[in-house]
Length: 153
Image (cartoon, rainbow, N blue to C red; front, top):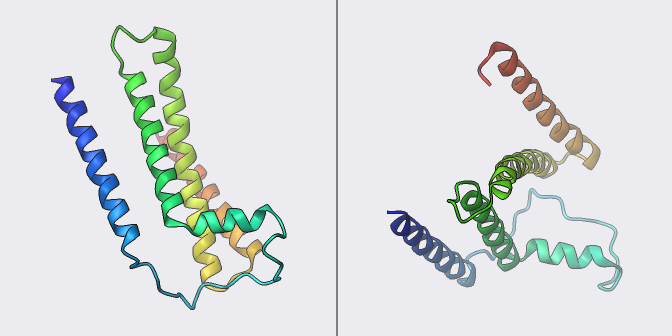
């Protein structure tokens, strides 16, 4: 029974990867958005590592590869967490908190960066956008504390 689930997960992952490669290779992403502010300040192509990171951040292939690696990492942690007798108990006990911490880290980063990027796209300065991102995270923390006090968490 477990082999069937693992096989179906593997096939679904291969289909997802093939679909991602197909969509990123078609060139449908060649459009321009005018509401997103463009970076100013110029600089040459060899001015530092920031240009390389920016080019990698804009490359859909790199983003897809990072997503696939992150998904494989989370999948490996989940397998270690629910693993059978072949996996040592200390590894199983450590995999649960690592999985929870990783998930919380991804959610927090997603909320902060999404708010920051949306605020920058609406014309706010970087400091104002960072304030909004921090405000959203603070609000999430307050909601978590309130749910904990009520007993729902």
